[in-house]
Image (cartoon, rainbow, N blue to C red; front, side, top):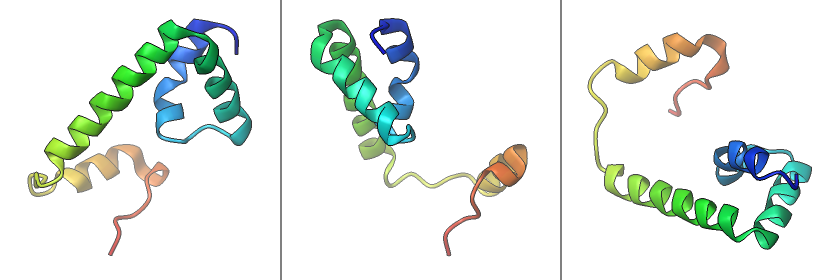
Length: 81
């Protein structure tokens, strides 16, 4: 994945560890050699961390999680008990 555009398209999946092991390795290798993509990665990683930190205690409005699940049907795991 020497292509920066492809790396940037896969960045969110990389951050969420949703790529195959091979895909993770390819993006990681690209980031080691591309300062521009590494900068984008660092920005997205920090943004994700800040959002997670700030939203940790926020409660979803009643029924929102169920409406979201309904939009995705069987593609979303059921809520944890």
